[in-house]
Amino acid sequence: MTEALILQAALAFAFACFAAGFVLTLARLLIGPTLPDRILAIDTMVVNAIAMIVLYGIKTGLGFNFSAAMLLAMTGFVSTVAFCKYILRGSVIE
Amino acid sequence: MTYLLAALLVIAGVFGLIGSYGLIRLSDGMQRLHAPTKASTVGLGAALLASMLHGLTLGAGFSWQEIIVMVFIFVTAPITANYLSKTHLWSGRYTPSPSGSDRPWATFDPTLDDDQPTLPKRDP
Image (tube, rainbow over all chains, first blue to last red; front, side, top):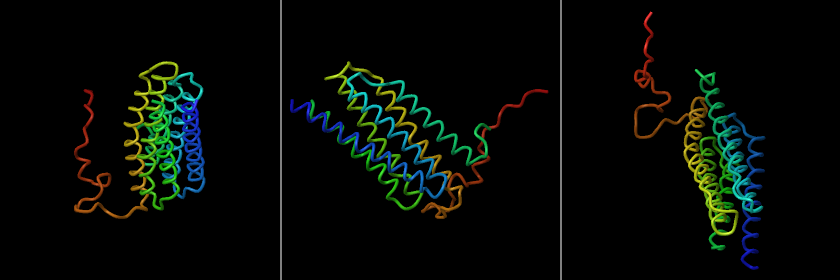
């Protein structure tokens, strides 16, 4: 019983930390003075979202939600690189 | 085993929070690049390790799929940081040149343009 309680407490702590991090990245997205800051905030937000998907898989006990996490990781990476490329060169595909 | 799982989850939460708090706390755009690209990556890696361990001991079964996501995140985080720092450099707000060398940053170096590979020409 107590071991399950410890696991629940750790899960709640991790959920709270990543949710607070999500709010902090949202604040940086709103107040970010330059465009690269906002891109970095979105990238960090995607990382926090993947972490929360993983934690949700642990919490429900249904296993790891592979397709959602992988899809979010790939979309976040490609969008960040494409946005930086667009700022640097004026076009995404040269 | 439950204690190891709980420790991994706490590490994941602390590192994820540090990464996102550094994004708010640090003052310069170039400094702000440090916290999320390193600390958040470690936090997500610890969360994925906890997921693997949970599947092995308590949950629905062991799977290697977490490794794929972990490798993907660990590979793409430096590329993202490289592109973002290039964007910072080209925005013109970041003036210091690299210390210990006379050359400018590599993205400004005009001598590197000669090394660009050329595409083969098609015969007319």
